[in-house]
Length: 485
Figure 1 (cartoon, rainbow, N blue to C red):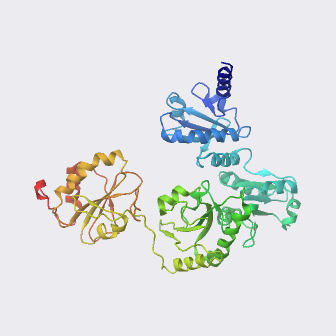
Figure 2: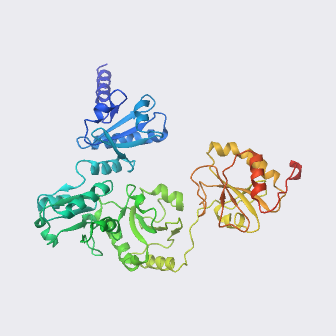
Figure 3: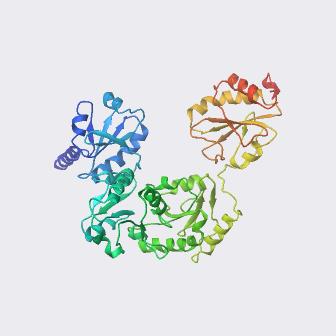
């Protein structure tokens, strides 16, 4: 009985502790939000799956940011006035408030680490004033790049322009400034300038750890963009979006700068040695923790954790969506990587395409397309092809299936048209087809395969028939009975 009472008491203590996320509503939002210099607010609905996924990350971030930046949430199912006032029409919606006024949307990561990093940049001034060399050393001793402006005085015109840039870019980068040039003496500063310090743990013999900018303020943003990551940065879930439009080679292995910095840089240095030979050819380089990106590697390349063992796994993703995978084992002298890149730039590599196996039988009214047969079936220059990109779990796709099958039956005897479908969750969608949701349907006309047309009409059989009567290259040949199949 004593043990039970202790357990019950402990449970009460834990439940009383509560959450570090503030709960705001219609009755107190304005008053309580105004009490915070900087406040991140999540507008959510309890039934929302994305909100439920975010909840533990948001809670962890609130605990870690306690005393620096406050995090709050508003349940829009019971606080419609507040949510309506700030234009919330989807969940979760996150917004940053300053002194009770909406300042901006939150566009950062939705992990605890990402929220903490992003919101620390939002706290306090956009650029930190450094008063001594010790302040400078402390500021740049971090796992993120640092941008420091050094000016001759508080009335410097260059300082004003620097602060404008810092305010505009504070969401993404760390800024600081000094109004005493002497603070930068050990970095050979003798005139006003901006220094970009790469993270100390990424310093290497292959590039400068500090890059100096002396030029017009209008060029500062492009200078930061071009230099912030250096030759071979550490790719992580928080900065991943910055690289999505780049042609990027990534080396995936056990990257861990907290517990194994020496081992991490052992492989990074071998990647960088090769990268220096190719850096002027438009390809970016990065290293990444394989475990953090395992889901992406499995989905895009079919690679499990056992593939490659302890050696780096090398992939290239282009901004256009093409993918390449180095099948040869990564050698310690870098020769295998060097050859892989030589083949890549010479156009000798075969693009990696994720594909289901080719069906053994494919004589039904709807032709099954996989990535490996897309060229043969959909891009057949002599046929019009209506192709549905679907997901097996999609309810709308399931509702469409019997109607789409009936359409295939009606056009089964037409020699000039193919009704097709492809599971877009297990096959790569080719360039030129924008598939953001399911089902997405395109017509690939005969002789115009480079100009697929998105179907935007109704989803009844007659809607498809009428569309194809208008758009098909040849008159339709319709079957009137299933006996014709």
